[in-house]
Length: 401
Picture 1 (spheres, rainbow, N blue to C red):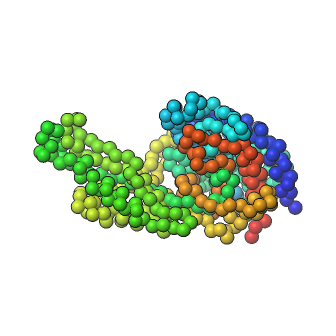
Picture 2: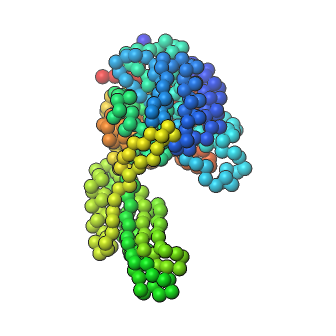
Picture 3: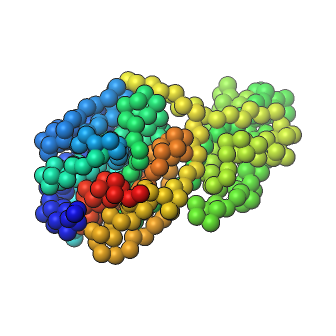
């Protein structure tokens, strides 16, 4: 019989070692497409704690495996972070000098999501030291370029047949709740064109920015009318960037482009979202171009894997094997019911569940409220709980029918 109490005791005993490893990761800047140093550090730790195999693939992901059973269970933590933004917002702290205060570890990536990565590596150590290998493979992926293009790494891993998981567990911050979905997203650009002329006589030209103005107003109104789902929440659209061109600052603009961040709730699709924009009165009355953005930047290893920026919403049913196994593991470990929820932001689940139909759940330390913020932090007591969950999940999954 699986000894959940023994697993939790082992995890608690390794909190300090896991926290030290996490501090090492925080101290290594790893903005998207510059993750090489932290990937290599993770690979060394995986080897040191006894993973059966460790590799860094051509995309730049680090992959560690424990066990050789028939059920392939993948646990994902992206190892890239966003940049730090304005240094003055960090209160005089260096974002890459981990600070431990009152049991909380601060630093860029602590919450999003190097804490999940550190816990996964020590879960692999726990599985080996506690001799818990069964009819499953514990596959840990330290994925890259998630902040730049969420899910792209998993499109690569699955379509290139590097990892073919039966289920995926994301370790994005959930504050130790069990998550089973998120809204999807799209990146869309709308462009207007004009005719430039000297700024002293604007009536001689056509100002592309003025053409864009009513479109901007219509998009703001569109946001209020988008669909809502009782679990995932409301679809949204916002303009995140506007840019224009002209021969000089003394000339009428001859082009204007806006970048839209479109969040998709359940039932919304690429086709429906584009059709809503095409139906806007201002779009109908103006000659505009509307297109999905394509992502095609190279990873830190120089690999380019182009994809359109469309990532569907996804929900894993509450009665699915993946979710029920998560509930069992949590309740057996901690003697209490687990909160089940969803992320407000986007994760690699847009690929694993949204595009590739692989059952996906989430369980991670820290709170998503600190992601991308100068308050980036993780309570250290979250680490052993996360470790214990990751150790227990494979056995709970295999025993769940």
